[in-house]
Length: 507
Image (cartoon, rainbow, N blue to C red; front, side, top):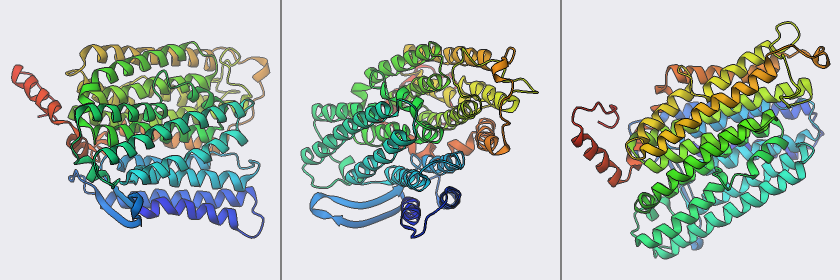
């Protein structure tokens, strides 16, 4: 069942690439959309087979491969990977649908998008460390080529920078995996076997720091973030949707799965430092976003800040904060996808993303009233307005992190206020005011342009009103990830304040 999620996109890519007759752009798009629709349906079917009350790995697949290297084809799923798989399938379909129907070199483009989808699914499902690394590296090449071929004016620089940073990330992760296998005395790279090995604390800290830097580049955390704004600005809109919505989550997923999951003792030692880095990322990303005039750069720097919330929740490592980390992954994936889709529509119709040039796009007669309305909704969700998924995720993160890191949590809350500031600046300058004469004859926004954004916006509101649809998959798994010391800290806090009303999950 899980292999289908991984190999169906690769099979679709082969069909498009090896079809003996020339394929039009429309035909390539139809094949890619059919594969994406199948992935969405298959993911939903797997969700019906998933036992939300089981904290362990489910739907296991294991096939011998290169035993001498410790490499086995091992796939399985738990509450940490299940929601990310659903989001990967959804955003892959959204990215394909929102691609330019007349894009040049369509055969290569859709092949790369499908390979990217399959590699990401493989990384989320792999339970062999070497297999995870292989999928982690495979996704690098398609995104590099998409940015380098279909990107903006500085696409060569942005793609090369992305390639170098991500390659260094992969080297560090592979070094940590090999070190873990060798120092544990096991020739296996099986996740469950390595998780049960006992290593000296000093060794754990060294390996964990290596993983933190490797996955920190992918998240990205400050100061390892500089590749992200350049990549977003130059990437086409569908690539930005996948990069922000799914690919960044490989970093946070890797930290939780392989960092916290394998090195819980070392994690507790490094947790205060991680919380401090989270605060820096949140505040730096927010202030940098305020200083931008390019709409895409504003959204890109907002991603730097919002990924810091996940790092804070992961550092706290309480049952509620880890659930909040997963919720923030889903929330950020949907909200950032919506914002990049809307910025893409604005750019395609106006030819600019500069908020010092744009004015009056909410004009009901000659502007983009629905796009502006959705942009307001996306900004409200990103700023944590109640009734939307952003509020649910951030509230759980703060509520779960505050008992462990009260000062850091309060500082991160400032980032939520700053989010409202830079999005209010963007909306006020670009969407309100008088429409300038240069933009008086904007091309009509078709319903095909609005549909992807409307679907994502509806999900953002639906999950905000009914968060259990998002949280039920992960609650048992994230609780099982909590290090024993964190559980003891919660128990001590409850004993010290017997009249305090702790969340039902913690009780």
